[in-house]
Every structure is written in C-alpha cells, then in structure tokens.
Amino acid sequence: MKDEKNVYLVIGLGRFGQAICRTLAEKGKQVIAIDRTRQLVEEMAEVVDLAAQADATDSDALTKVGAKTADIAIVAIGSNIEASILATTILQDLQIPYVIARAENYTHARVLARVGANKVVFPERDMGERLATLLIHPWMSHFVQVPGSLFHV
Image (cartoon, rainbow, N blue to C red; front, side, top):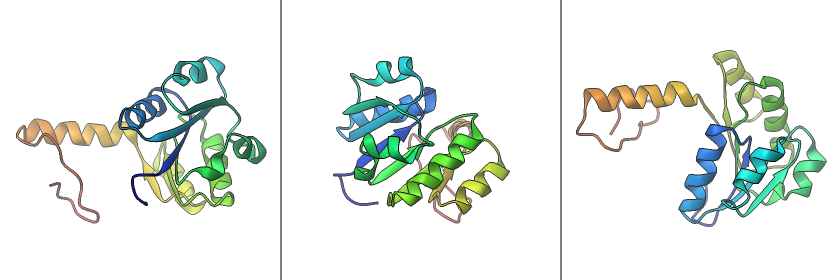
C-alpha cells in the first residue's frame, strides 16, 4: 500500500462497509462507496467523496464509478458469496493494486485468495479475537498482530 494519498473503493455498504467508509472519511481519506441498494448509497452520500448505486459484478459499472482510480479496494459484501467472488475477480481484472475481501467462511476465504484478494478478513471473528485479548490484557488499548505470529504488540 502506498502513501497517504490512497483512493479507497468500498463495495458493499452494510454495517461493515459503512464503518470502513466513515472511519476513512473521518481521517480525511478519499472514498468511493458503492452498493446495489439505493437507501444504503443515500446514507453514505454525505459521508464519502462519491457514493454510487452500482452492481459490483459488472465491470462496466465499476469502471463508470471510477473504480480504476482506486489504490485499495475493500469488498465488504456480506452473505452474497457469489457477488463477493465476482467483484474480487473484476477488481483484479481492473488491476486495482490492493484488494481486501470479507469472507463468510474458510472455503470462501480460500476462493477469494485464489481469485486475487491480497488480504481476506473475517470481521466477526477478528473483532471477537481482539475483544478477548483486550479482556485478558486490559492495559492494551491498541495492538496489531505481527504477521506470521501468534503474538500481538
């Protein structure tokens, strides 16, 4: 991932996608947010630089909303595994440099990695692990996992 000037593309504006958009926007980052659902797009219109109703499984639709300008794309699609995989594949075809995708299960995660996701996340599992660690070690207000390690610092 590059420097502070990254353009972020967030696909899927459920709770997870909206939280990503809000946090990035609050930090002054440029965010393009898309979803199929008009109401969710309207909720984010005042938060992000561009909110668009589009089908992330349609390469032309992604191109029209400026997806090719993104340095980092987050596929935050929830339970629609097929759409998640197709969107991730299209982002690779569009040569987005870094793609993060949300997985519903381990098989889904393996497929996402195979079609080009640079990082696969499990929001509920990941947050559960972080919360448990904070409960065990309350003095840790912030921590990151060292790649390839079981330890957090």
